[in-house]
Image 1 (tube, one colour):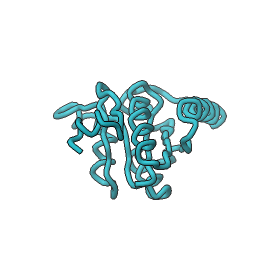
Image 2 (image 1 turned 90 degrees about the horizontal axis):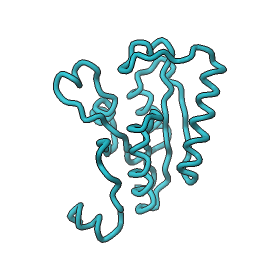
Image 3 (image 1 turned 180 degrees about the vertical axis):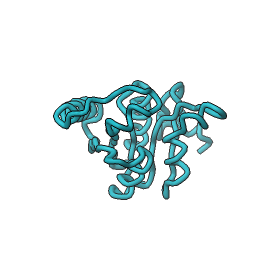
Image 4 (image 1 turned 135 degrees about the horizontal axis):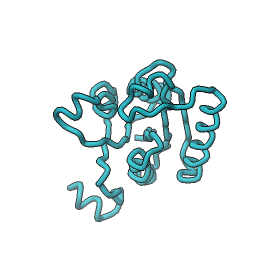
Length: 159
């Protein structure tokens, strides 16, 4: 496994997968790509959080540049991609980038909803896991990063 894609939406929960993926990439000697998908302004108004994104392209470009800089500071060894959804569902945009990058694994966080909550708001993580042609590692927000490659990690994973 030499290419890993990790996704983030910039939220605290979204950023949680970064340390998991970073440790895994280091242990495997894999290339790490960090992806954030910018929601389309019209879709964001109907999204899970019902917040309105700025509508000007200049403002979206400023937000993109800020997120790219933040991600470069957090993960200087990673390739950073901030893409616009461009009319695609976020899960489709993630799968498109995974295919373009030729990744062998996708790492992302999940809210861990089940039942009615997942049915009502859907799950990007579930859609990616269901349709990805590669393994998807889902990280719940309360999971601590694993020390991949260490003796402790081998005991935890049963390796």
